[in-house]
Image 1 (cartoon, protein in one colour):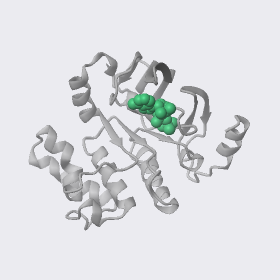
Image 2 (cartoon, helix red, strand yellow):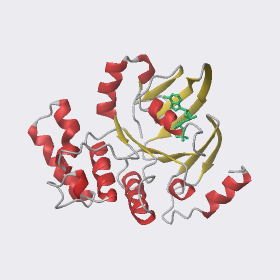
Image 3 (tube, protein in one colour):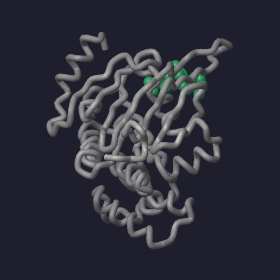
Image 4 (tube, protein in one colour):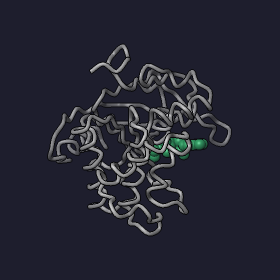
Length: 253
Ligand code: ADP
């Protein structure tokens, strides 16, 4: 499917690098990462805690500037934009889901979901999409509830609905199940999987959990800031983690 980019990728990253100063010494957290994600794919970035997954996702989303390298989404290079440009681009092209949901506590579920529309000053007709998403994400009846009045799984589904609202080119989810119990986490993964497999959305999740990564079509294994292996799982209905776990064991993970 054409998406306006030369290699058919929705997102291409090339040589993305980021260092932080820890004490006084620079420490490379993301080290020359090159990857591409195609339309309708669900890609997992996995690896042990501290390997740089979260930082990589933030760089791909333009939440933080890269030190070097490029990130092209829908043919536009995020790394050539200033912070304001990245903010506007992100609002229109990227749906970001945080581990701790990041909902606004004093807004209702419906108001949290519609927040990007309000910020963008959208016409009221767009707000129909909020009820469609609440129906699709099994959140009916919770419109008027504030985050502390709904469960963790419901809060994460509200966060996903908010991320989907502007019809982003790509959804990025940082440890989307990290704060959920096993069953609720699986429901959230099933939802993300179905949005990609059945509705043609494109998503990247960062996770340290092989059971979560097993929902992906492709797993990029990270260690010490680098992608050390790509594991093609293909699109499967069963999400059985056993083949992935045995591949990871061979890598010493
Ligand atoms: P992961 O998501 O795989 O757990 P992170 O990307 O959160 O890894 O972190 C990778 C490394 O970068 C860690 O050592 C972390 O302490 C460090 N790091 C992340 N963000 C910052 C920051 N803003 N300043 C300094 N060090 C950071």
